[in-house]
Amino acid sequence: MADRSSHFSAPDQTGHEYESLSRIGSGAYGTVYKAKDKRTNRVVALKKVCVALTEDGIPMNTLREIGLLKQLNAHEHPNIVRLLDICYGHRTGKELIMYLVFEHVEQDLGSYIERNPRGFNTIQIKNLSREILNGVDFLHSNRIVHRDLKPQNLLVTFDGHIKLADFGLAKTYDFDMKLTSVVVTLWYRAPEVLLGLPYATPVDVWSIGCIIVELYNLTPLFCGTSEGDQLTTIFRELGRPSETDWPKDNISIKWESFRSIDSTGYMHNFSGNICETAKDLIMRMLTFDPIKRISAMEALNHTYFTEEPINT
Image 1 (cartoon, rainbow, N blue to C red):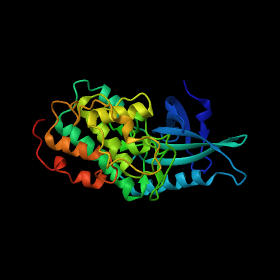
Image 2 (image 1 turned 120 degrees about the horizontal axis):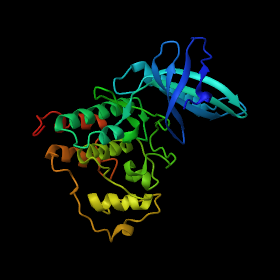
Image 3 (image 1 turned 90 degrees about the vertical axis):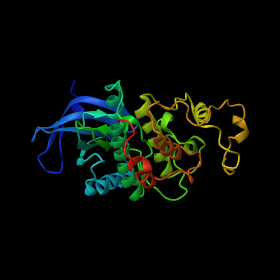
Image 4 (image 1 turned 30 degrees about the vertical axis):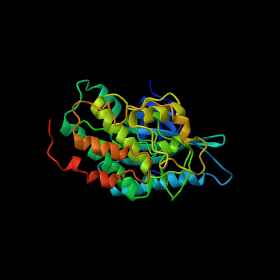
């Protein structure tokens, strides 16, 4: 059913008017609708955001996010979803309703995996992984951390190409920043975030490592039920990090807390069709210490992407 609250005219005199067709999804940072540009009949994705106004009007963090979106959009990167329009809707009390208009892509990676129960061949996984890394490397080169990489935020076009979406949590980073821990769906969350430590671009690389394994296994890798259980799940699968790698400062969780973990180590749950170079790349991405973790740019230059596939 169409949501009439997202049927409105853009205030910028462009003549564009959007009508909601159906709701795609919602979260803490806004609701996304499939909609139609009534002037061109183009199908778009409308992200409806409620912005709490301050005495000075629109808060600076919202203005920064809009600037970030425009900055990304100017590059027209093939693996970043296109921002088509920004519309200011009506004001309700101390809130402003905004609409971010994006190109519409029919499916995300989560639904793409579900629709392919037999899985993907080596070349498909390699191409999807490369495009995810291309998009993330572009963000990182612009000093942006996505912070919420998961299959639901990776869109897949009808011809199988990746576009990164949902930058509601993205933030231009500074060294040693410490942001809210309410980022990244639990299963794709890096250890430094789970431990409440400062973090930067390596959190995205950890998430990609989890996603690549999911492309092979067709099921999430680390399915913890809480932050503490997520760490236990990670250490059981990868092995507990050494005491020398354990952070020393500003951390309440002690290394000894995980002494009793019965670790299988080195990813015994890898799919049988995964090659050794893919395993090596993934283990470099899932390195506990973020300083030692491979970067997105380094990952793109890994042997996995240059060698001929062993199986297809």
